[in-house]
Length: 292
Image (cartoon, rainbow, N blue to C red; front, side, top):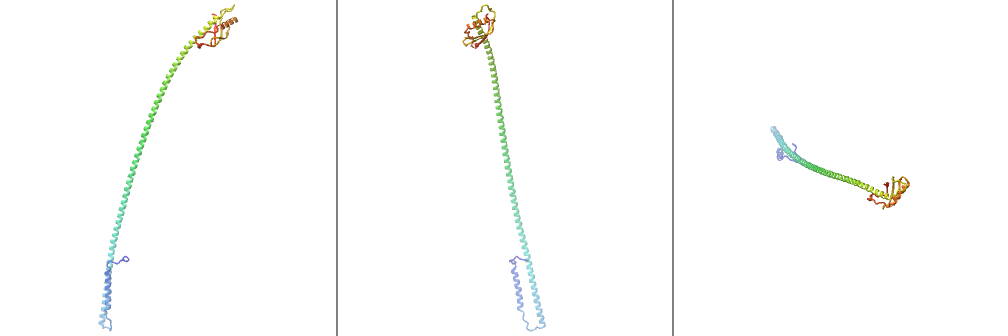
């Protein structure tokens, strides 16, 4: 059996004692042996030889017994050492197994803790993702509601503007119809007034021309040897007060004497009668003169 360096077996005192006893026995035998001074007798010599043989045999037996005991002790020590080694190995194996078990248990706890942390992180991430999804969904619903409200407001505003525009157009159309009707009535009234005025002016002009003709006829003198049965067309130019500025025969009365008589009658009629209506006054007046 090989012992660790520097370490003695547990029963080393017994081994030392056994060695000391054997050495002491060998010294005792050597010291107590008598010297041979004279050759002994044959019988004595045989006894001595036999005694020496017996001592040697006994010593060898003791030595063999010591060696056997030593081997037994060594074997026992070896077995004890093997047992200790086995126990130590078993203890070491147990310690290592326990350490391995503890390491595995610790690793298992770490894995379980890591799995727990991962599950908690996943659950937290899932909750946060769900909360984010809910926030986004709520924000989307708010945006859609706001967009719908905006569309509703825009639709209402558009309907209001369209209604206002329609009402404005209807008012404008009604006002336009009223204006057109008023204008039509006004035009009709104006036309009626104009017709009435034209009629009045025509009558006033006729009266005016008749008054001028009558005055000229009153101032006309028939030339000797001429007949009253004639007519002529003339143009009289007058000033605003009725003073005659010029007389022109447009269509002859039939003779130069008649023409001169008519011109003289016009000049004697100055100033001409005033018009019954200022609007019928004309600077140039054309008319047909008949004596009767």
